[in-house]
Structure formats: structure tokens, C-alpha cells
Length: 166
Image (tube, rainbow, N blue to C red):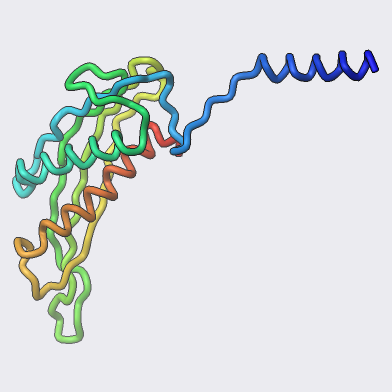
């Protein structure tokens, strides 16, 4: 009886000395408590300041909703900065009469991620997403919906690359 009690006590001590970190979102936050996101500047003629502001806000929303981190205006433990480097509208699907039936809006952002607590996790990467729309529609008529689709995808991909541990 004493041996089994002693064995159980040793097993419990072994597990008590182990530390397991987990998050319901699968995130790796390196002990960070805050994040900051600088305005993602438009670096291409077609990307408007309005678009860049919406992308910046979309990313902040994803970070706030999917992480335990608090938003800091500057100098967060995790820092994001970058720019919109490509904003292209191009015909995609060609019909039999050689006219486009679909048009694609593609947007590329370059992100610099700085983890002040674990610098080995820092990166500078480009992310590209797109959305298609009927060639018979004007970009201005559908751009709000396209921006939302693309921003949701970009924000999630940036989150996954930085703290999502993917």
C-alpha cells in the first residue's frame, strides 16, 4: 500500500512540475499582453486611404476577437506595421466571344511583425488575397463587398502567421 501511494505521489509531482500552455484559438502569445497595429499605408496608386484604414481596422478586430491581448496605440508587446503594395483589377474568365465574364480584384499587403518578447518569431512577409466579380458590374458598385471579403481573409492569414501558431 505504501509503495503504490509513494508511486502515485511521484507521478503527481512529475505532472505538477510540467507546464502546458494552451489557448482556445491555438495562439502563441509568448507571454504578451498587448499588441499594436500601425496604419497600413497605401503604397500603390489604386489603393485608397479609405481601403487601407478599413484593412487596418479589420486586422485589429481579428486580434481583439481571437486573442486575449489588449490593443495598445503604440509599442505593444506584439507590433504590426506594413503597407498595401499591390491593388490590381484584371479580367479573369474569358467567354467564347473573347470578352471577360469575371474580373478579379487582388490585393497584396506587406507586413512587418515584431515580437518584442521573442524576437526569433519576427518576420516580414507579403500576403495576397483576391475576390472575383461579374465583369458587367462596376468595381465601384461592388468594392465595399469585395473589400470586406478580402480584408477578412487577409486579417485571418496575418493572424495565423503571427500568433495563430499555424
